[in-house]
Amino acid sequence: MNILLLEDEQPAAERIQRMLAELRPGAHIQAVIDSVEGALAWLAEHPAPDLALFDIHLADGLSLEVLEQSDRSFPVIFTTAYDEYALQAFGAYSIDYLLKPVRQEELKSALDKFDRFKDLLAPVPADVQGLARSIRQDRPVWQQRFLLRLPEQIKTIDIQEIAYFYIESRLTFMQLKDGKCYPSDFNLEQLEERLDPARFFRVNRQFLVSFESIDKMYTHTKSRVQIQLKPAAHLEAIVPSERSAEFKRWLQGG
Image 1 (cartoon, one colour):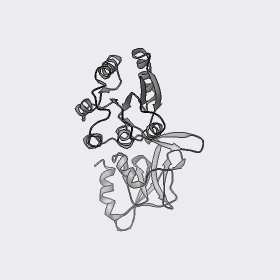
Image 2: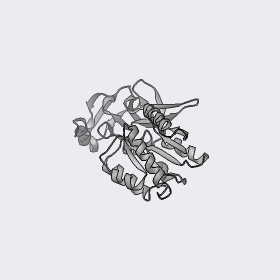
Image 3: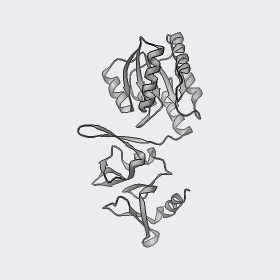
Image 4: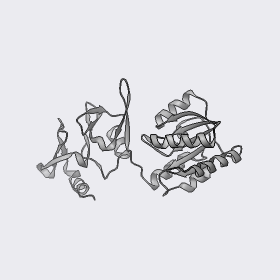
């Protein structure tokens, strides 16, 4: 049996691999992948697995996007750290779902279920797009990490490391708290949808800032607010008057 493992937390991935080695010693782990993008690239070049174990939430999105965007069909066991939304749907549409941290007896039960019903089960969720929408609506899942493709490596940036995003010369940049700056794969509109609004605020057309990045604020003309950011920005970050009231509510946690 060939198995594809999609998991972005290395300890969890290693734990699942150890359990699979004990429960299915003859199984072959085809690949261990930590992102939606990586899974789609892998599936484009390899045969579909007999079974996949998908962590629902990955650094670059929901693993359901793999099923939405790939033309490959295969049965899936989902794993998740959350039990507050749509889990009945996963039970209906997939082999099984397991709450993290995954326990060996629960994984054994899911694998036994796969063995019993693999010839009868639909290879992918019947309405995977509707299921993805249900998850996004029931519990917004804010992006926690970003993948950067550098000339000689791939780097992961945790959301805690990011001070703000800004636009310059029609390009979007990610400014880190340590002073480093990188181009972003997403524009500010896309970032607004992906980032926790309690942490990040779109102050104007050029800046999307984290609360921690605000160093000082000054009253500007016509109810506008000028923000001094850290690290310092070489462009002015001014909250326009039409967003001033919302900005002040955000500062107070409203």
